[in-house]
Structure formats: structure tokens, C-alpha cells
Image (cartoon, rainbow, N blue to C red; front, side):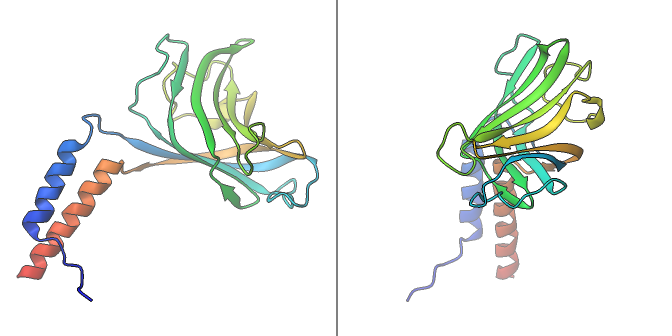
Length: 207
């Protein structure tokens, strides 16, 4: 059986140039946020549910990746709507990526003078559109504008800072106690780094 050949240096360099030329002019800057929480409430009981064994006091989390350089889809100054690249919800150490991940909404007029950051997820474990959860931060005078929030004091959101989930048989509420974020390479940047490494490896092999 013939072995696959490694790309030559000129071929790898040419591929890198072609792929980078085809990449969009907008260079994404992706941030991965992880909010850590503790389950504070549980309703119902369903031992057949993947989260059926989760109890009050267990850990939970909500993670999402977002392009922080994207434009607001509703540039009216009071409501910001942004796409998420992906999201993951976890209860009791069991994590899953929902099939439907809504927009991030940064609402400066959320009601009763409050401001909120929301993300709705649906079809977490099933195809039922009504099964899902909501990530929510809500407080008063905590957001300077309707842009994507990055650096903030989590405990300024005094009205709500939680991830809730329910499917009609079982439901949870977990309250956030900390969060963190890291900058992750955008797809184009990761590709360029990979091709660059291949190019350097090819040059070393030829010496």
C-alpha cells in the first residue's frame, strides 16, 4: 500500500497563502467564558434523565465561545444581540452542547429599571423544543452599554446570576459564584499556525 506523502515546503506555503487569502477580512477574536455555579434548587424527579441524580449543592456551569469583535445586530443603543459560536451547559459534572443555542441579548431596558444579559438554549437532551434552559445575569446600573460584556464584577448582578434548566419532569437552578475567560484562536489563526508548523517541520526534514 502506498504511503501518503507529506506536502512539500512550496506546496504547504502555497496552500497557506491560498487559504489565508480566502479567509474573511474580519479577523475574529474569540473569547471562551466559563461561569461556575452551585445548584441551589431542584424541582421534580426523573431517574431516567441524564441529570436525574443531580442534587442541591452539586456543581454546575455554563460555557460559551463568542466573537467579541462582531457587530451588534440591533444597533439601537439599548439592546445588543450577538451570535455565539458554541455553548455548553453542565450539571453535576455532566456536560452537553444544546442543539439550539440562542443569541446573547444585552438588554439595558430589561424591565423595572434592570439590565440583563441572557442566552436561551433549547433541545438540550431531546428534540422537544420546550426542553431547555436560560443563562441570565440581571442587575441595576451594571452595564455601561449594550456591547458584549467582558470584564465585570459578577456580584454586581444582584437580581439574577444563574443558569436554569427544565424539561417538564425535572428542573434546576444553579447560582453563579465565579467566572473566567480565555482568548482562543479563531479558525483562521489556528489554521495559519498549523500550516506554519508543517512548513517549519518540512524545512527541518530536508536539512
